[in-house]
Structure formats: structure tokens, C-alpha cells
Amino acid sequence: MSITKEIRESVRQRAACACEFCGVSETDTGGELTLDHYQPQTKGGTDDLENLLYCCNRCNLYKHDYFPASPTEPMLWNPRTEPASAHFLELEDGSLSPLTHMGAFTLQRLRLNRPPLVAHRLFKRKNKEEAHLLNRYRELLVLLEQVNSQLGAVTEEQHSLLEEQQRLLRLLLRR
Ligand SMILES: [Zn+2]
Image (tube, rainbow, N blue to C red; front, side, top):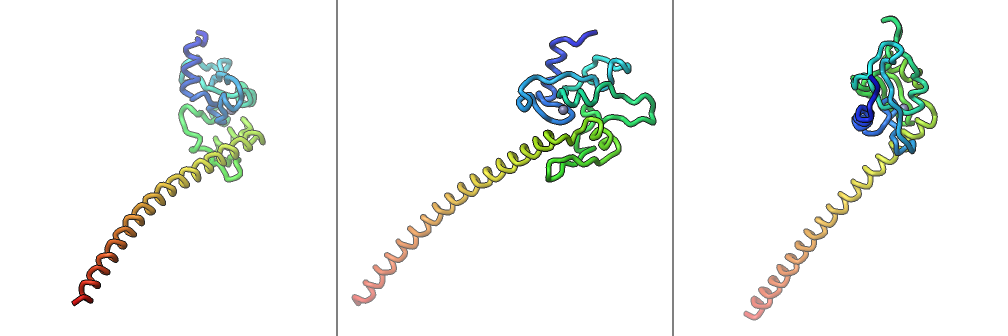
């Protein structure tokens, strides 16, 4: 069975048009990515949706047709069955640190700390932080506006109380 256009499209959509191993998107790379068989066809893998991954050229190149030949050989992380956070920790500098043996092996095999990828993670991280700061700034503006309008109301009330006080004082002094 060959991979139809529909299968390719559903794998692509399922992955939100981004590499399931490293996270770079079509927008980042400027083109569609490749389809990868988690278990290669040469090693008995099928065209089942569960065995297909949306994968960038680099990750596909480094992964090649890796699949453990025996249980003693390391398994590659399967993004279809486990989230990245189960095997990797993203550090402040944008690099990944492995949390498991599988993570360490995958990191090394797919070169997930290749410099342009680390730079890309750092860029995304900065953008996210900037968006967060901007949101907080907008929230503060709204709060300040609310406080200002409340302050305006209090000042008005204070003003009318002072006027009444003066009126009463004048009346009292007349007596
Ligand atoms: Zn990739």
C-alpha cells in the first residue's frame, strides 16, 4: 500500500505542520516537511497512521532507517506515544537536556542540539516571553484606568462634602 495524498495530509495536519521530533514548522523552514516511518519499512514498518510522523529534512536525515534490531539496542523516542517533556528538559539557553536513556539516545541520534535548532528554540522562547510581558503591560493599563476612574469619583465626592461643610459652617456662623 502506498501513502495517499489524504494520508499525507492527515499526518501533516495532525502534527500542526511541524516536525514532531524537533518542532520546526513549515513556516520556519519555508516548505512542506517529509513523512517518516517511525519503524522503517525496511525494518518491517507499515504505512499505518500510527507509524507515520511528520518530520523535517534534518531529523529525517539523521534518523535515517534506525530501528533497534534487538531489545538490547536503544529505542528512539516516539513522539506519537509520549510527549517531549517525558524525555527532554529545555534549558534557559535553548538547548535540550535528556531526562531518560531514550532521551539521551534520541538527542544524540537526531542531533537535537544542533546549533541552528538551539538558536531557533531561544528565539521562540524570547518571543513567548515578550508576548507574556506585553500581555501583562496591557492588563496593568486596564487596571490603572479603573483605579483612575475610581479616584475621580472619590475626588468628586470629597469636593461635594467640602462644599456642604462650608455651607453648614456659614449657616452656623450667622447665628
Ligand atoms: Zn526536525
